[in-house]
Length: 473
Image (cartoon, rainbow, N blue to C red):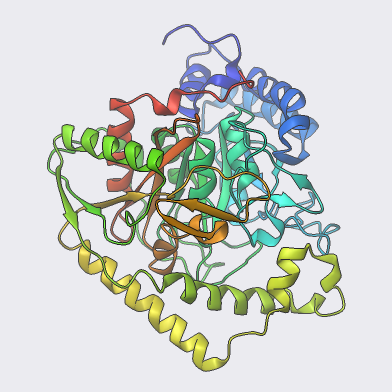
C-alpha cells in the first residue's frame, strides 16, 4: 500500500479498510480525521445537521479493540459513515428535515442503520435534507441551506444534498441517501461523487421516513464505485419489516468488479434523455461514451418511448403518498412547513382515477425499459441535463429550452424510479465553469453487479472521481 496521506479523511472506504487491516491506520485516527474536517468545513457547507462526535469516537474505540482481539467483521469495520436525516437512529433525533418532527427520537434503528452497525461502521452524524425529502435544492427552512462544495452559491441537489456535499468535501467516506425521483443520483452528480439507486426491493426502507411508498429507494453516496459495492454488500437483502424487499440472494458485488466488460452490450438511450442538454454536459457524456466504447463494450444507440409522461405519473403518486404520510399535521400545522413543501401538501390530491392512471402509466414505463434491456446489458444516459443551478434559480435555460429547475433536475432520473431499475451515477467530467457532470448507468432488475462492473471499469480508465472541490482540500 502506498504511504497514507497526511489527512486520512482523503481515503476511500477500500483504502481505509486496507490500512486498518494492515495496521497502518486505526479506526480512532480515521474518525478523528473526519470529525476534524467536519468541525472545519461544516460551518461553511452545512452538510450535517447533527454530529455525533462522542458516540463516533466511542464506536471507533470499540471497533479498534474488537479488531485487535477478534479480527475484523468485514471491510466496513471501523469505517465512518453518515446518515441522511431520514434514517432512524435509536436515541438520536430523526426529523426528516421538518419542524413537525423536530423532537422525534426513534426507539430503534432503521434496518440499514442496524446493518451498518453490525458491519462495525462508525456513525459520524445526520446529514441535511430538503424538507420532508420533497425537493431538489436542500435549501431547508428549518436546518439551513447546504452549499455545493464546488461552488457555494449553487445547490448541492436534493433531497440528499447534505449527504452528497459531505462525501464530496471528505467529511465522510460514505453517506446514505434516499431517492424518490432522483434524490441520490442528483446530489451525486452535482457534487461529483458516485450515487446508487438500487433495484426497488434490494435495500430495506424499514425505519426510513417515507415520501412515497412505491417510489422511495435507499442507497449510498461514495467516492468510488468500488466503495459503493462494499456498502451495498453490507446493507442489501431481504427484510421482513419491508414488504417491498425480495428474498433474492445478495452476490459479492466487490468480487465481480474486475470482471471483463468487453462482452457487455451497452445501449445509449438518446431519445428523450439526450433531447436537450447543457453544452458542457453533452460534451462530457459523448466523451464518456467514447471511453466506454474504448473499453471494448459493444455500444449502440437504442430508443425507449413513452418517457415524457413519467414526471406526471410520479407527481400524482408522490403527492398522494406525501399527503397521507403528513395527514396528522394537516391542515392545523401546514404553516410549520416551508413554502414549497406547504404548497405541495396543500395541492388538491389526485382523484382515484388519476392515481390509478398514474400507476398504470408507471408500469408502462417500466415495461418499455425492461423490453429495451432485453437487447442490451446496460443503458447509458445523462444523470442530469444541466450542472448545478444557483440558489433561487427556479427556471433554467439550456439546450434550446427553458423549463422549471425541478423538472430539469428530475427528467432523466424519474423513469428509473417508476421502473424500479438499478441506476448508478458516476462522475464523468466537468463543464467549462468547473461544475461536475454525471453519467447514469442502468441495468436489469437486481443486476446492480453489471452497472457496478461497468462503472468501475469506467472509473479505472478515468480520473474524474479523484478531483477535489476547491477550498476543501
